[in-house]
Structure formats: C-alpha cells, structure tokens
Length: 164
Image (cartoon, rainbow, N blue to C red; front, side, top):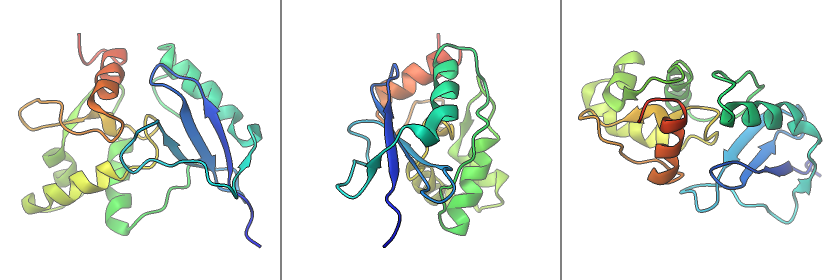
C-alpha cells in the first residue's frame, strides 16, 4: 500500500494555504489556495499531519510579514522536462522583480512561438507563492493570469513592492 500523503493548512493573507508533502522525504509537493485553477483538495486517503511542514509554515509566515525574500525549502514537484525548465527559470526571478512570459521563454532557450507553452507551464506550477509564478506579467506590463486569481497576484506583488 502506498504511503498516505501528508497535508496541512496554513493561514495566510491569501486565505488558507493547503500544503502537501512527499510521504517518503517530507519535501513540499504543493501549495494551493481555495478556488485555485488546478489546485489541490484534500482526498480521503491523505493524512492530516503538520509535522513535515514546520519549515514551510515558518518561512511562509516570514514572507507574508515582509521578512523573507527567498524560500529555502526542499521541494518535490516533478513535471515534464519542459515544465521543470520553466519552473527553474521562475525560481531565478528575484523578490521585488517581475519578468514576462517571453523573457522566461528566452531564458530557457525556447522559441518565440513557445511562449504559449511557457504560460501553460507557469499556470501548472503546483507551488504557489513558494515558486514565484506571480512575478510573471504580460509583455505590455499587464497583470495577466494567475491560477490563484488576479486579486491574490496583486496582493503578492504589492507585498513585494512591485506595485504601489
């Protein structure tokens, strides 16, 4: 029988964050918000266990308090090779900065027509907040798509000082 997925909830200014971890390693596998497009919901065979999430809880609290600019957590969110390249590029976007879908595509060596696929990979990011997909904006500076909702994207960019 496969080990049961540990989960917990953490209060945040975005609403309750649902965190899941790899049952074998304790590495963080997802962070999602209520109503998130593609977000996770607790399943019957999961087990509520706040134990593996101590560091994540502390770092998320410090981030939302404006005291932490870079997460240092063990992550385990596998995807296709393309998605992992996009997600690695996201991890390199610093706190308080923004980038565009086209810049992410260029950073991973993808062609201009691949920008739509880059957007899909960013939208499939299972680690909201921790992996900063909220820092990606449209080429014209518009605040385009965010799986957690544009209101939450605005809150995160305001917290980081990107928006007034």
